Amino acid sequence: EPEVTQTPSHQVTQMGQEVILRCVPISNHLYFYWYRQILGQKVEFLVSFYNNEISEKSEIFDDQFSVERPDGSNFTLKIRSTKLEDSAMYFCASTDSLQGSRNYGYTFGSGTRLTVV
Amino acid sequence: KNEVEQSPQNLTAQEGEFITINCSYSVGISALHWLQQHPGGGIVSLFMLSSGKKKHGRLIATINIQEKHSSLHITASHPRDSAVYICAVSLMNTGNQFYFGTGTSLTVIP
Image (cartoon, each protein chain N blue to C red):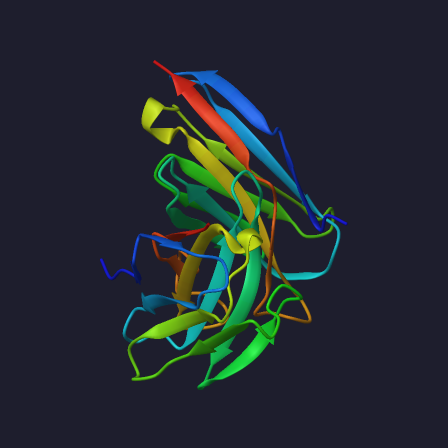
């Protein structure tokens, strides 16, 4: 079954450093998403991406965040200057249509745990 | 403000029991999703619903659009069903953006 792949699985970074989280969505999918989950809290929407541009973003997704699809396969989330409160699990997801793929909706990656120290 | 409310927050069941997890939402939605989050953190999409009922194996999901309510049922529960079950909605006007419930932590005891 096709998978969404995220790398790395765990990243530790110093406060103020830039990090890039990588995702390889399913190859025929068109809509891409980033979510985050702070430990013990609910999952939060960050941004959606379609046709090489951001289609929606949440209040969390401020100027410190950016997304890119540099080469047609990778989908990256960059945090320019990390803060302690950016520590969270970051999930990438993709789908082939806004109505979700036939039965299961969206496919999620296994997440990147970001720890800012 | 919570657009999505789930109950119960925690649920412990004996193996074989029939389980129901509820989700209520307060906004107009284009679709409702049930997700399963494993202890390691990975998220699996179980169902996407905009009306009626869907079934996959021992899992059944229903939605009542008028009452803004959905339920996830697990029949003949098994310890491997132990996970956090999350309800999420995509809003009518912003179909790309999900709002998530806080999740229901299910533990099935052998």
